[in-house]
Amino acid sequence: MAQELDQVDPWEIERESVELIPLLVETYNASTGLWSATTSYTVACAPVGSRPTSFAAPTTSSGETGYLVNGPTLAASTPAPAKFVGYYKIDGSTEDPVKKAFTLKLV
Image (tube, rainbow, N blue to C red):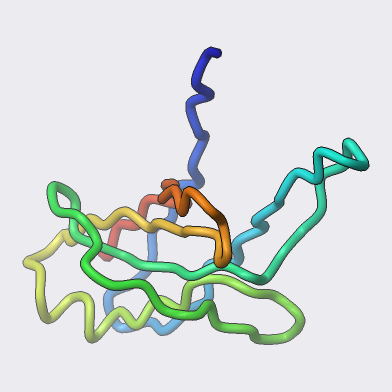
């Protein structure tokens, strides 16, 4: 079976900002043949060239769920311009795969 390549959204945010990157994560139900949105996932963000070491629950704000970028905290750990990759994994999945969700550049 061929593996699908995930398309990820690129984000560019000011280093001083705290902003939500909304994520629409969908799961496939084989018995119904339908895809549906889920909020049962965890997220992580790691500098380009490294891997995530821990995942946390997504943030919900104004009806959207996703990764809350805390620019001042992320920028303190990486020199400018800071580049990151966001990841998600679905809770309760038997295989627990990790997928790329977005790229982030703090300017």
